[in-house]
Length: 275
Image (cartoon, rainbow, N blue to C red; front, top):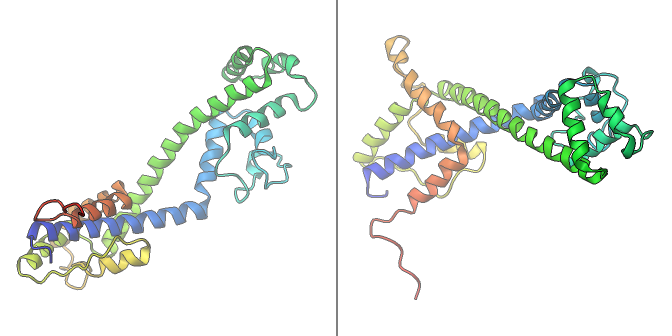
């Protein structure tokens, strides 16, 4: 098709890895949505940020942070994860915290004694320090809290991405085993098929959904129909499955972006400019 054994085999492997990555990431996103993992991770992050202080519940009962709830939850355990936010705007978090601190009964100028009454030493020191830097300005105090929250959420986002990648790898490994997508076996067959002129992979563009990914996989030498029986032969497939699963860590956009670049390679050099 492309006149190069290496190029054709490479395209086949990219289609294979990209399809597995797309399927795994789609399954991971569906699982995360079903289990409300983003909302749970965010709540856990806020709870860690405030060291489990009761302010967490007050903030989550605030309409600026959790507008879908009725604001009457009596404990963190009573919060509805179906209604809990998956994302909080930093300035809204800051304003909800200030409202939770003064409870509409203390002016900003008299807020320091309230901060000094916080039982947690770390949180008390942090908020008192930000209050002093605000120099009597509510907007400055809220900006300080918003920046503090935003910095903490960057770390929480990193932790969530690592967790998501771990699940994507597990799901990709499950797909690789279920469909017997052994990377070494696929590469060997693609190379042989390309060398004998049998290989035909009509690449018209990257797959954009799970159905397209399964369709692309259907054109590759995968499956259990011709697989060896149980024993050492199956054990020999394990490295190939692991390679296939590991490819999902790069993400489907990486593989299909690479596919677009590879299919645009021209043996005669760069495409000349239009006159």
